[in-house]
Image 1 (spheres, rainbow, N blue to C red):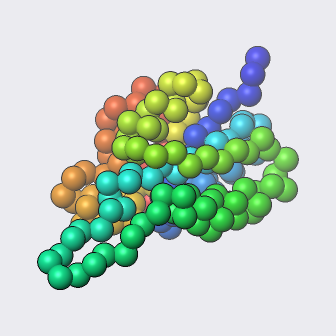
Image 2: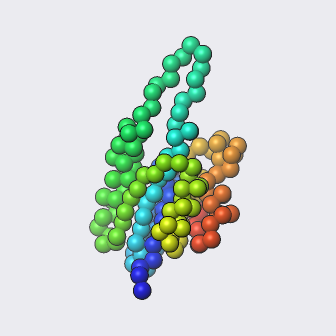
Image 3: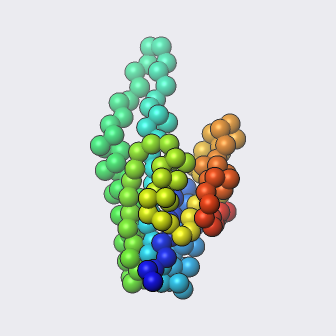
Length: 145
């Protein structure tokens, strides 16, 4: 029998980092494999254009490099001593759809997400990623406050 796989979807918020801690704690107890995933939605990273103001140019490659260096690599290093199979990945697209695709593709056993993301205003207007996932996935989901 193979080890269970826990997917932790993060955005760098405090709640998502607590979700990583919670997943690691449970993975140690169950000897599960853990994948830490962050999904960048390019449309949200594009600046609004205001007449007469030139927005900074955002570069996808630079964004990837920074996210890996500042978020994913430090997390992998922080938990490296737990003797677990931990992987990290950055993907692009709609976070809900990409996370659901990963769940199906990898046959994930449990999903961990922070209950509140980085932008409370966007969550109120559009609905949070965590809330959408809670209503759409068909595996156990742990929403971490």
